[in-house]
Length: 205
Image (cartoon, rainbow, N blue to C red; front, side, top):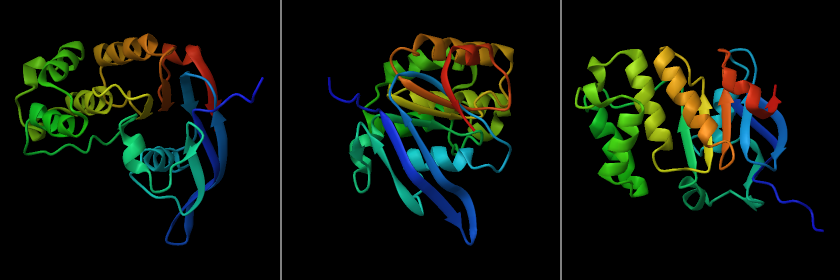
C-alpha cells in the first residue's frame, strides 16, 4: 500500500513582524478529518498561523501543502475550501449583518436561501437587517462564524470562536462542529473549555 496522503502539511513555517518571530519552525501534518485544537498563550502565534493557512498573511519562510500540493501562487485554487473566523469579527460596521454575508457570499456563489438557512440555524434572524455597528459583540461573532462556514469549506479555522458567545451561541456552534467531524478538518484555538474538545483528533501547542 502507498503512503497515506495528507490533507494539510506544514513545513518549517515562520512569520516575522519587523524583527520579531510570531511563528518559528512550525511543523505538523493532518491526515484525517476531525477536530484539532491549537493551544497556547496569547501572543503565541495561533491567530497568525490560521491567517497564513487562510491566505490572509504570507509566511516569511517555509511552506504548507493542501492535499499534498504546494500552495504558493495557487491561492485561488484552494480558497473555496477554506473558512476562517477570527475572534475579531472584521465586519463592515456601516453595512447590515445580512449585507456583510451577502457580500462574502458572492465570492463563493452562495445563494440567499443558504444565507437564510445559516441565519436561522444560528438564530440571527431578529437582527439580520441591523447595521453591524448596532449589534452586540456576541451577535457580531455569530455573523462572523456564519460567513466562515456558509460556503461549506473543507478546512475550517476558528480562532477563539467561543469568545463573546452566550450559552445558546456556544451550543449552536458545538452542534455544528459535532455534525461535521467526519466530513471536514476543523481547527480551533481557544482559551475556553468546551465539551466538544473531548472529540478532538489531536492537539498542538
